Image 1 (cartoon, rainbow, N blue to C red):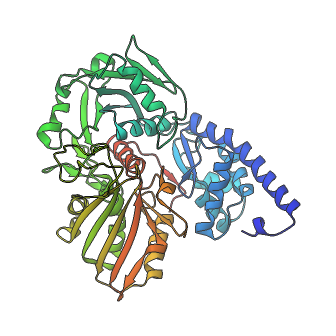
Image 2 (image 1 turned 45 degrees about the vertical axis):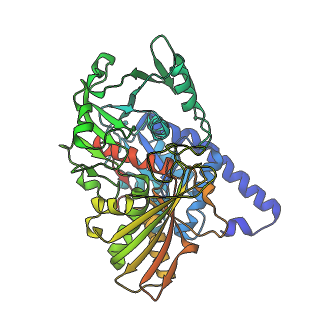
Image 3 (image 1 turned 180 degrees about the horizontal axis):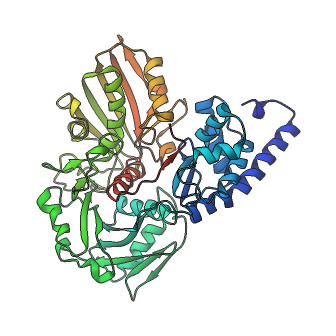
Length: 484
């Protein structure tokens, strides 16, 4: 922190210019590691691939949350330069953790890296699984965000290949409209890259990836092999089928091997909240559910609290952004209250998220109740957790435990933590975490009654969790460095 607050204005400008120059030099090295060696670089979970100079500097500044000082770009640039010369195999390397470990170890940097990365040294990008075909069945809000995320992962470190989307044809210019919705989004902004349309062949090409658009009303009759697609994971974003019989129709399609539902599954279908019950996924599973956005938002936080303090019972109140199944103006709706204008009203409705937590975290079965209030915002929701704990705690202790988890814990990719008095919902649009704990809002009464406020991007954050499940189903894992 001292480097940013001490010295003259001229000194500070010179220091900034130096950091900016080093970050500029880093960009092609990070790109080369990703493209040629399938190496994904990050700083304490903040990915550097496809990022610009300012993003890289901000990621280094984020390190002060862990090490209490800004991570100097001067420390990581020589490290990245050395990594680029090691001809590494596929890996995920956290430069923040690696730099911290090197500060403790000391000695020669190259010798340190040779020892730390011996497992993948000299492997020339090997280690990525054979390409795995992915089909998106449905192309609505979640489907398009899944497409964006999967496309951003292609080209290094991931075996997932988006091969097709399956939709019902709604108009003669359906293909052009689908491409336009992928290209521009009122909430999440423009697509990062280029998109072209081939109406003759019914394809959309996004950043060089050719995506076949298949028109069908019946999942069982699609022949994916006729498009060169084999052994595909079909991600059902429609929500039309949520039980084994309905989703099993996808498995009757030629060329499909597994199905993932982006909604809570019914019956005996496993509901996966990535990071919490990921180990429940087996190679034999052919139908899985990625649960709901709310279940993903709250279950990781609940797991940490239950493991640390124990939870006797609790209530979850979800303040949820409106969704496109609600009416813009008052009109008939089969659901209670949802027929009233979404942009003008707060609407009390039901949520199954509290009960669904138990499918991923059985220890909380029967312990949670829940309700939901739909509010006039288009994205980012909040869950208020009112919990009776088994052990006493304080606001400071509870927040510190969740902050530590968000930085270095096993659920750091699912839980984020914020401690700002000015933060509002729109600040979390695009968050890749399942849920973000608002530390300043935490309440502890009498030692055992805790109230927590958890923000979550119910579109993008949830979609990131879905992609993590797809990657697990595909066996798409690379070694992570530094080792613990």
